[in-house]
Length: 329
Ligand SMILES: NC(=O)C1=CN([C@@H]2O[C@H](COP(=O)(O)OP(=O)(O)OC[C@H]3O[C@@H](n4cnc5c(N)ncnc54)[C@H](O)[C@@H]3O)[C@@H](O)[C@H]2O)C=CC1
Ligand SMILES: O=C(O)C1=NCCCC1
Image (cartoon, rainbow, N blue to C red; front, top):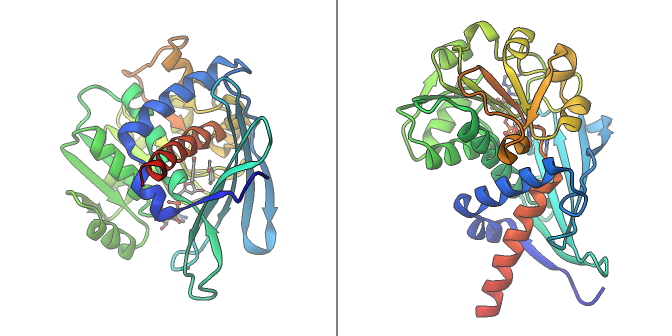
């Protein structure tokens, strides 16, 4: 290794990553991924190791973008935490490598005081939060009806917050509704966001009549049912990233046109896709590339699993800005 790696803490990432720069890079990356050109993106489906004792999983997400000279790996751990646990449910470390030498360019980390071990290093989750929400927003930009007015968010955790932020930054909804299975979750969420939001007492109340629905829960059984969903609505389904986990019921999965970030990822990891037997119509990148249509008039589901290429371009953006800032000072 030529020298010590640059370590970019979460607070610094926060100062460097902006949706207005991130969204176009992610759109470009999704298109490149779906072109299946190995000089653009090589990204296998993530390898997942169960952490049985801790009710979690570690996913390893490597990506190589030869034309861009970006070599990246993310280690992401995700857990089935009980509500009320003060441990995070998703943690990630992104490592950027020099593709020629193979040495580490940057490791992004955050220190999180869990109360148990104040100096324990837990790893940067902001890239995961922001890029996941930004990709859901891209799905909405492509697939929601143009006159969409009502956004509903099921879940009130970290992803709910980043989704609220980017959806309200990119679109002008007349109404935003949120539902949490715990009243405290909704109260905390409504207190934390900067704009207007209505807390609903049931998931059904939140989604009835909504034009765009975001599901960002840790549930393993369906929480969103097709009979509640307005025809023509767009659903961005972000949770349930294991083959036996569900967020959406069979009715919705079979009635909707299903899009995914990665077809292989969805067929390997998504319980909603695998167990319902629904067909994946297209990847978002196919729509971006113009090889598959955006069926905005239909009820659509974007099944998000998360992709290494999203982390790679996000991390490279942070690193470029961090280097530019370091050069100036
Ligand atoms: N598709 C992707 O790229 C990514 C997906 N995820 C997934 O997104 C989901 C949300 O992640 P975070 O916001 O970080 O988690 P979080 O723990 O911060 O929030 C989870 C929310 O789900 C709710 N919840 C938990 N169990 C539930 C149940 N049985 N029914 C209804 N609601 C329930 C909690 O009350 C909370 O509001 C998780 O499933 C996570 O694995 C996370 C990162 C990336
Ligand atoms: O892409 C990711 O990062 C994740 N995807 C699903 C589960 C948590 C993290």
